[in-house]
Image 1 (cartoon, rainbow, N blue to C red):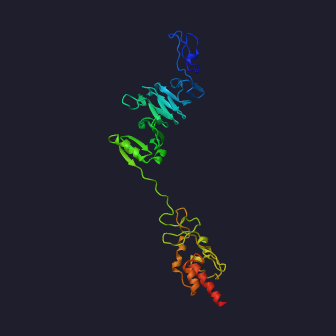
Image 2 (cartoon, rainbow, N blue to C red):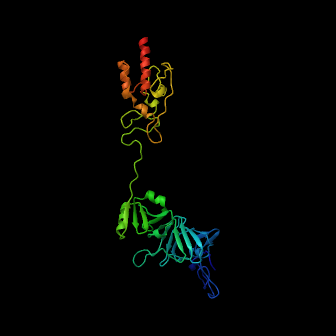
Image 3 (cartoon, rainbow, N blue to C red):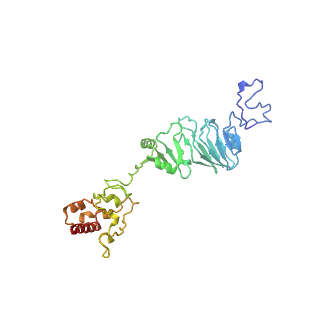
Length: 348
């Protein structure tokens, strides 16, 4: 009789000859084993009443998935060369005294989330999680443990102690990228590396391990853009550059337009020199800015600083407007347009 589930307690059985799950009349002829009060694991379509039964009979390369938490678990062994995966699936696995994993000529990979803890030994420390010998191997790709399990952490994974780690199983195994992103410090102890979410906890751990060193990680750098009093990125918004000049796109810097004048995109040919074959009212195509929006520089930055060298028109009011960039994005082309309009106005 094996791998059976019965929720009937012994005190509910009135027969004089009784035992858990079955009464064995002749132990020399019969075996009663691996029975339980609830299903605890499953591999494929097969359910198991005990985790030991699953480890003993699950097919090679199969995944044993917990379906309930297990406590007082005796030693789990693989010694026949099979390769198994244990998926914690959100449940916990607590070993009995002298319990743990025994891997001799067999391989085990642990995945999923859940606490795994061994009993406390005579020295007050957790008993070893695993005994690995022969061709046996253990690879941890998940779970939280009540002891340092760095030697068994799989490639591309890392051991991480969160800032809010609980005492039952503080050592979590997570993807290495996750550990590095969330860590404030790293403890190097020989060939072992453990990431910590709290720098103080890392220093305490290193102090308790002779020869261990602590590497405190730098805080993330401040994102670029709008630093040091810079203006807004080149997305058509207004702002100022490092030298205090107006920035943004052509229309943003147009200022107050008078008598139907156009914005900066109506600059003359050559971005400052009117074409000889065009009359004063012609509209040429503005040259694109050489600055890059993707790099965080400002669009039309080169034309937005031209007003400091604007030629004077001779009219005090117009010159004053040009000096503060109020007529348009002032450049050589904008000044030429302004002078042409002044000539027409005086001719009238």
